[in-house]
Amino acid sequence: MSRLRDKQSWQALKDHFDEVKQVHMRDLFAKDKQRFEKFSIKRCGILLDYSKNRITEETLARLVELARESDLRQGINDLFSGARVNTTEQRPALHTALRNLSGTSVFVDGEDIMPSIQMQLDKMRSFVNEIYRGSWRGYNGQAITDVVNIGIGGSDLGPVMVTEALKPYRMPRGVNVHFMSNVDGSHVVDILNSIRPETTLFIIASKSFTTQESLSNALTVRRWMEDRVKDSDKLNRHFIAVTANKEAALEFGIPENHILEFWDWVGGRYSLWSAVGLSIAIYLGMDNFEELLAGANEMDIHFRNSPFDQNMPVLMALLGIWYNNFFGGQTHAILPYDQHLHRFSAYFQQGDMESNGKSVTRDGEPVDYTTGPIIWGETGTNGQHAYFQLLHQGTRPISADFIAPVETYYPINEHQTILLANFFAQTRALMMGKTEAEVREELEAEGRSVEEIERLAPHKVLEGNRPTNTLLIDKITPRTLGSLIALYEHKIFVQGYIWNINPFDQWGVEFGKKTTSEILDVLMAKQDEVKNCDASTHGLMQYFKQNQY
Ligand code: G6Q
Image 1 (spheres, rainbow, N blue to C red):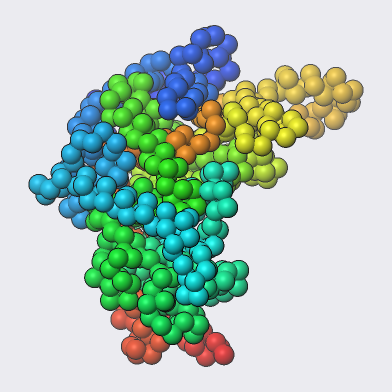
Image 2 (image 1 turned 60 degrees about the vertical axis):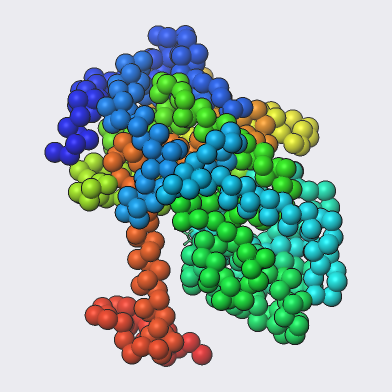
């Protein structure tokens, strides 16, 4: 048995699970009027109500004991202090240092990294200022109106999500931002058709500066620009690179003073806090970008210093483990009731699934328990008219986070009240369900015949007892969004730590990149055949080659 399943607290949770698995939340709420007060916490402008979970005070105590027995405190200290928590790549994961506003030093290989972080922030600020003061001009002297971020995965999803979420904070008369990620030519063409070359600045964001999609897109864009601009100095005004591989960016032709750097100790999916966030800073202004950092820092401080039973990321992580490992839950939904947060679930689909989609422990032993769940979700209320049916009456256990702001930017008519009514109604309905007696009573009140009641009743019963967290945010601002993102980042870290896996590598993604490049060599006739090619892939490639024109 693995060390995790061997833990006393794990065994205690197993025993406890057998005792409480049949308990209905309806009864827990009926018995304890203080349940909301007991199981809710407010920090950083976010109220987390976790009372609609299948837990008692004893469950929580036992989960917290699991965190203690896993030595989570040491794990948190290691994370923040720059220990090499990314064990396979022998790197720290210091995204928290990017938003460390305390001024205290953080060391990597004996060197204080805070001055270099500040230097990149200063450089970002000066780029943003130049754009807004109109001193950064395109090849024919016009000011910049559009910025295109060319990047994928971690070099794309964060800036897309944040710029969408904070649209109301866009700089007055601000530039437009576009995100070119897919190597599909349609994505490239759609964006190039919507901009004017003379007033557009392209940011090539790639940590490795070797990612094929981003480099292919960057090359196509550069050729498109070269067709219009012959003078290389003028052409250079249209390109910035953000990378941890400065040499490759120089080789691509980006001038040194147009390169923003970050470091191998920033994971791609944790990089929006670095210069990868340049498109965010340009769209919202540097002050708002720093507010985002400040909000994340506030959550970092809470996470680092709070006892586990009053620690928002730890609580959310432990609840996730409760469903994942004891109830056999396989999926977790993230459901924002805020249209501007429409990329939030997609962002944490990467954040969570790329981090905790692992099957061996940090020591390379196969795990004998399940790790990261499938993360998915869309905005409410739309989802209610679609997949929510399965949440209410499907056979699979699903847990969900419901996220909404109290205050909206657009207080038109009763929209926010109606939105929040839906929001509260769903978590209540999922928790309460509807018993057969209630269904029969309702049908009788409608005047249905005995036969009809018999026929309909089983279909209208809702089991309920479906667990949800509710996150009510005072208002979505750069600061609270920063805290919210950091909350999820730390939740993921805690789960990975307790599962004893490395949440900071992504060998599956790397394997996908490498396999593509082997196949591309064959499709482009640089190689005759993929080594040991299987009949399916071979047949498909042949079919494509024979039919592509
Ligand atoms: C993130 C992943 C992955 C990565 C992209 C882009 O953690 O490793 O999504 O961000 O593959 O990589 P580059 O930034 O190196 O182009």
